[in-house]
Length: 213
Image 1 (cartoon, rainbow, N blue to C red):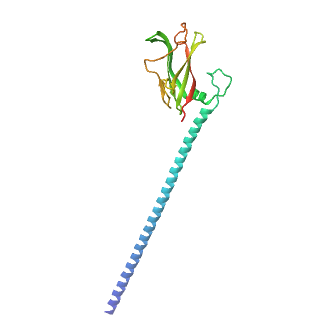
Image 2: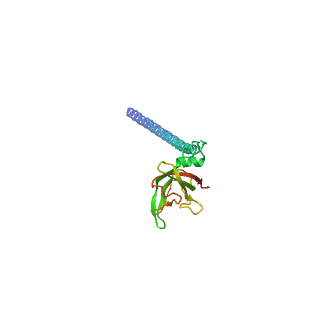
Image 3: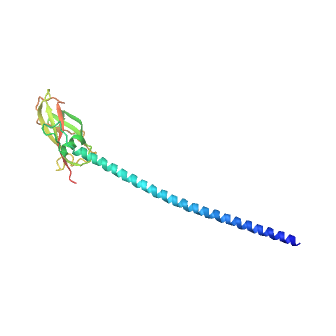
């Protein structure tokens, strides 16, 4: 009888010890899990911090790239080059001449005899001008040179398609805008002699003014 009690006691003590060991292992696993979760949160915060740094650096690089692009455009605008269309020995161009040479585009130029309601057939001129630069222009002076069959100038007319004084067709020409006359309108050329033949003419932008900002 005593032996049975002893065995029963030993069995109870063993089960108690096993239960204690299992609880300790469970607590240890829980602590490790908590530690791992804390480390994971720390890593996620570090990754988020690094991501923000990368975004900031990317934004700074984009800004630097844009500033470099703008600087190149300004350098291109202000560089000095010879202007073949001008009869001058000075090979340095002004800012206005540089803008004319590189950032103003003439298209659809035509100099022919056209029908006028008042004067019948008269020499007339039409053209378009596109502002490809970043500046708004308050004045554009255009000169058309009328030539003979050999290309010699025999007359010239000046026109002001853009003029902020109120008498021009456009008061200003904004960046990326194009000047053009209405379909039924043209500039007349009253100084051209009668012997002039349609098509014998050249056009040049001879002056501009930047709008004050």
